Image 1 (cartoon, each protein chain N blue to C red):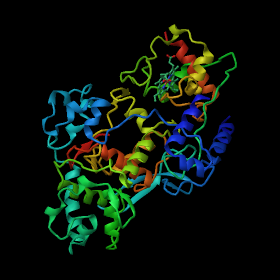
Image 2 (image 1 turned 60 degrees about the vertical axis):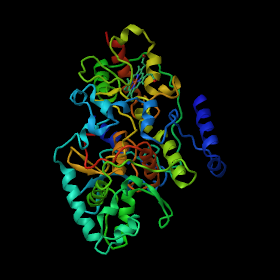
Image 3 (image 1 turned 180 degrees about the horizontal axis):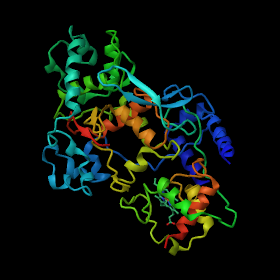
Image 4 (image 1 turned 120 degrees about the vertical axis):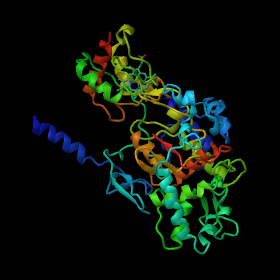
Length: 168
Length: 300
């Protein structure tokens, strides 16, 4: 089990973030995302590795010729088989900035509140699609496409669906 | 697929030349807004300008209310409302020292664009309010920090854009424009207008793991909450840079863009890069008419 997750982790880490040469004006060194550190009374910036590798997605550089991942339909196979408790903790990491979730004192209001979500009786497949890639429903949405952009895996999204559908 | 058609129309209408020269690349844009290159243009975007247009007379009751204070666009952390002594004041002193060293012969001021150059600091008034500008020597539009780096370089000094010392000199120079309205011309045909247009486009270009554009939040969700933070307007945001962040650091506008990019999981660019300069021109134009106010503080 440990070995298994280590294996998966090392594949992930070994996958090159940059499929092409990084733009020369990106803060990248040795293929790694760097962030600036400001040194008091110095004329130089120090660059240190950022906590996340961000090279896999398009930048604002004029040299960046990579495309945005296009909107993608996702056909969720039944049964949903989601773990609502795990979904809740994922939601508090990924969704809470925009959506109000029960028990939060700092409600986000960019997205719709998730109170009583169960009452809408949405089909699981619909909720799954909204999380996987909401651009299919609204091309101008600000909600990230968690599936298409590789942020969440199939099971993560199932767990989120189970959690949302369980909110009384 | 509707969205690719939308992106295609954008590319066709805004950069026909690029499409002809290079293969089509699918990129997404947030819905475009109209912006006026003048700070009061906010009245058509968020309307909060009403509350922060006069930095000397902010409503202290709004400033003291965490649900409402976003309407002041954080101007209550600018002088004269904010009278606290903070790291920005130390930076100002450091900037004065450095400027004195660099300008012993008056050539640093000449290089920065002070007419006649010289050692008198009185001629520095208004300099900051007219940047970014076209630079014949660089053959491009450049912001003040880029020009500070360039002019220091000519004297063999390294003052990288975004470094503490560069921002310190920038704050010191800006202090001579305190109270003077920002005035850059992006209306007349030419490189400044072109830079503004590129910046406007970039402001709506989606990027990164979350596929956000600047405008996703700052045009289309102003006043809404991202958990504890309330999103503010992009108008009037360039007048107080470089800024002292209450997390104890001095931050140039380009380094703010780096932070914006990293916070939204987008690979950041280098300070002084072309896209950041175009965004600087765009944002500075949205501050046209608003007084330079340094040294200021910000939490965010």
